[in-house]
Length: 61
Image (cartoon, rainbow, N blue to C red; front, side, top):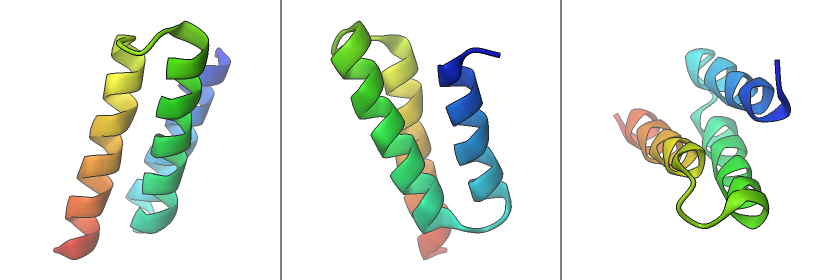
C-alpha cells in the first residue's frame, strides 16, 4: 500500500471510530500534502478534502 492510501485508511479508521476531529485533521493534512507534491487539482487531494467535510458533518450530527 502506498503512502497516500495508508494515510487515507488511517483517517477513515479515525472516522469509523467516531473521532471526527482527528479524522478531519488527518484528511486535511493529507490533502495539503498531496497538493504540495502532486499539484493543486490532484483528484486524491479532492477526495481527502471531501473526507474533511464528511467528518465535520458527522461530528456535528
